[in-house]
Image (cartoon, rainbow, N blue to C red):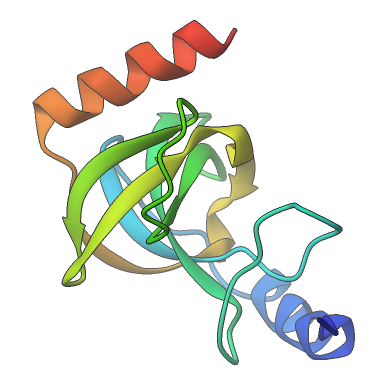
Length: 127
C-alpha cells in the first residue's frame, strides 16, 4: 500500500503552526497521528487522524497517548476500552508515544475510570 507522505507533510506543517490544546488525563481525542514508517500505526483520512487516549501529561505542550484501533484481533498489547465513536475500540499499547498537544484535534470524551486503571496496568506490565 502506497503511503501519502507528501500529503502528511502539508498537514504536519499546518499542525505545527497551530495552538497548544488543553487536555486532561483519561480523555479520548482525535489526534493527527500522521503517516509513519512500516508497521507504525498511521492516521486516516485527509487529516491523518486516529483516536487516542491521553495516558499521562508532560505539561501544557506534550502528553503520552495510546492510539486506538477498531481491529477485533485479540492480542495482549491491545486492551479493550469499550465503544468509541460508535465502534468497539482497543488501545494499542505497542504504539503509545509522546505527542505535542498541537496534534490534538477534537475531544471525543473520557475513558471510564475502571477501564483506564486496566489500561495503565497493561502499560506497566509492558515495562
